[in-house]
Image (cartoon, rainbow, N blue to C red; front, top):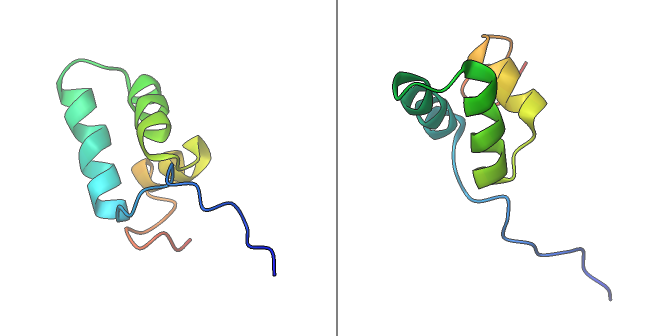
Length: 64
């Protein structure tokens, strides 16, 4: 049996932590878009998913 890629780039982080990471970056002077891009890079989660979370289109459990 062949298994899919077991890449660790998408870390085991909940959406509340993602939101906190973005907010911390914004508070330190980053623009919202730059903060989202940086957190996406750090976590492996898509920028679109983080954008939706930050702008209230997704709840903290990742559900639209």
